[in-house]
Length: 188
Image: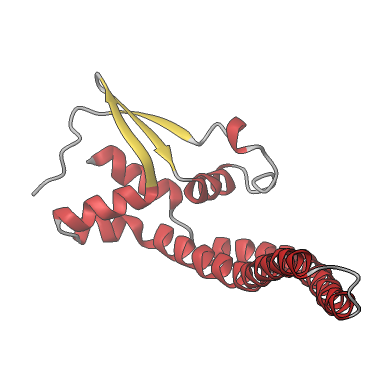
């Protein structure tokens, strides 16, 4: 259990660190907002273009330039694409909200993980471990800890606050920790 508690100390953030990360999130929020706004604009233009085509194809049907079969086929095609556009727009509108709720939850959890672990029952400890770690592996007396990306990023920030935002997750030395242990079973 001690190696896990040590790991929780590695991800614990103080208020100043949370503020630095929050400020960074605010900075990237601006560019993400621009991306989402531009993407929504492109999708709205495509939706309008498709609606004009539906109107045009209806006129073509009335003028007998196309037959009923062609009209129904094209309308179905256009309506399907319009439904896809609506779904894409919903994803863009909710993506921003989900990111910030998750980021805030992860930072708060990281700050309190050790205390939560120590004061929890066995099932709650298991849930916390599953949330923080991708898998735990005991190799003889070495505990191999692979974390979920969010917690790897927090560890990276704590180890190297100047460069934590930039590395490729595959090359982060802190993503897999090796700790020597003799027991993995939590006290009951």
